[in-house]
Length: 300
Ligand SMILES: Nc1nc(=O)c2c([nH]1)NC[C@@H]1CN(c3ccc(C(=O)N[C@@H](CCC(=O)O)C(=O)O)cc3)C=[N+]21
Image 1 (cartoon, protein in one colour):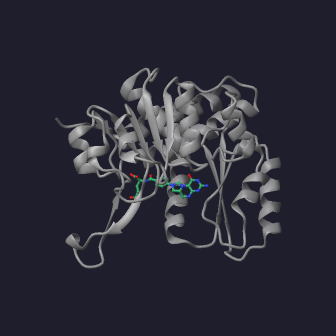
Image 2 (image 1 turned 120 degrees about the vertical axis):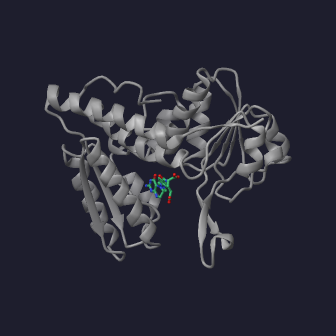
């Protein structure tokens, strides 16, 4: 038996199409253009690529993209002054500071400085609290993207056993909250979990977000389960030639896809959904800021 491969790239393109339609309507009917500000500190090459892709896709769906590049040694005060300015700017509906930042800056303090209503990463404690207490929040892009893929694949998630491996504030914890909200029975597991393979084997929905290449083995997967692989790990690929690398997930894809009912690949799975949901969150923030109804099909 071979699993359905969930095409996150195609699904993300569809979501971006829906966003573009709603952005066009917002412009025509209300004269509003959603705006996303992205702050990049320093010149990390991988971050530069991500930020460029985000900017490109933001413009493609008809939104305004504001990029702010700061030197690696920017004093914290200057960064905060920029965030304050963006918080106060009515043309900016979403603010994202690309992580990681240089060690003299604190990610926690940066996130705390962003207006929760503009926190399209969903990292502010106010958003974490709103989500946990079942209220309207900004939800982290990656878990939101995973939820969209799961709903598309399974329809109702009600009553299913979901196991989330990983407990980060960015993915594991908000993912668990969203699954709980969709009436799953949720287990949050992690690297210290006793009998992790056994816990994973009980999962109808298995979300892997540990950041360790191919840690989740094929025989940890329940036959027919839906597997969402959040990991994006670059590993050496000497078989492709000297010095070459390739991307793998947190799941041993080959073996798992023999057992699972459906599985996301890496690349082409969750990654593209993360950026699509960043745009979705920016549209949502714009609607909320202007007292308009929530965009359709793009929120948790
Ligand atoms: N404040 C903040 N928020 C973030 O959401 C954030 C961040 N900082 N820092 C870096 C990570 C990483 N991240 C990715 C988004 C999309 C892909 C993606 O689209 N990946 C493609 C291609 C990957 C490739 O070819 O390199 C795929 O999986 O198919 C990957 C990684 C968002 N991040």
